[in-house]
Image (cartoon, rainbow, N blue to C red):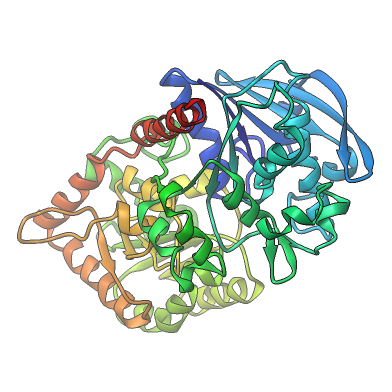
Length: 478
């Protein structure tokens, strides 16, 4: 089985969120299971020099964008056994950042077309092209419209994965002809209130659609979570699967992580040494008995920060806890947490920055990890927290519902604490309940043991993807 991953970002080359972690880790699990898997990305200006210096130029070609042909260079790095190709065009990708430009519709139309155009030049004929999120969503449409008649492409099948349905890549109608080179017979498959919706094209034209948790696969078929595509997703429910993400358990391993203060496997006393180290580093009172609650998150509404800001003063005024927050995002939230730290300097540390090393220290140091998300397609942070023995306190939505089971004191089952309604006081009650169990060592040992003993690797999920690849290629032959 030969599979090409097409995506906009991948760890460690370029990252803005969880998508990059998936593209960095899942191919390695597929390779370990015997799949010939490769990855293709845009070559951004922001890729660190230590990687760009290793790139080997393997092909030069021209990519049609509507009525024009644009230069395309293909460069290659083999990283941890995975061949990774980079689409090089300075005009489209030689800029700061990844997204957010007025011509994103053109930039990613070019990338999607380049993915297909370059395959003969790099001598790779995949059985399946696995496309991720809206940035690679029109590959299945372009394959069907422009390439299916060519014997080189005729047997290729496509999988499209929705990582976050909120971001769909919606552009003006003119994109259809001027950038994608398509006539109006294809408009219905991408039409969205008179515009062109790239993600809709991925859903309509791919052979199979996946998303990143079973609960999210159900949620996006409802109006509240579907963002206008719930009817389409319901119509495609026979070809829609929810597969929970994993994490790179080799990289994220508290027994070998060089970023944390003290390495440990499941020893809570050793884990507590990380709390003392972080308290000292962040200028909080050094006190092993005070429960530390953490968030590592983007500071945006969807992460439930409106719930937290509503009750944070009450929590920090009345409760004997410490709260550590790491993240960047909306300016209003950044300002709010900076000001809250000024009000509670001995209880709150607001780290308004991005730091992989500090995030690992926080996972290792914290006792509880809060994720009160409005929606969470899968979530990786709760899996990292569990891996490091930080007990998740989460809202029952998306992948949080699939990966965090509420602790039951009667049976000792469960690896976290959960609440259902999107309500600030439900969240606060659940967090206080978790804190109460922290002060009951016999229960805290059970819930942390459950967290440490979970399998958060990609192994099971990788096999589920392989099953889908096999099914769509067999169906094609029949």
